[in-house]
Length: 198
Image (cartoon, rainbow, N blue to C red):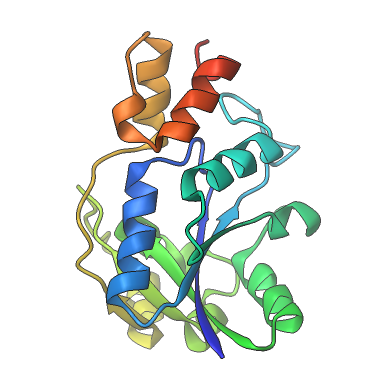
């Protein structure tokens, strides 16, 4: 039975920080594979700078290359919107009964867990692998404290990289060379397609 870490995100675009976290999880924790679950565009929300679902999925595939311990997943593109993590996990468990699933998340996401759909059930059923995020202060919330007290949390001392999609998109819009912050094939694709320039 393989232990899979699910790493949810918009990956707009995938960058070096994401790859480092995924690599750390597969090398220094019991997680055997990381699946990058690309979040779909919500048709009810303004698109803004979010690229099309399949463009972002393609960039994840470019970013992970031939790393056999990482996989890009479009599972949420085929599930009803809005996407809820608990529903995605239930679907994956049904389709992949030979795997056990855990969640990989930054500390900033952990601090909003009490607002997630069916959070109590989520933390009861799934282990959380949490990596540090800069400036991620825990809010004062009794609802959050209750959820966290029930959760199976593994705090992972992964390298702290303060890179974000927002930072990368802003840099590209300003005409800066942002190639240092993402895998070379991802940068090449973004540059060739002219993404994020406006």
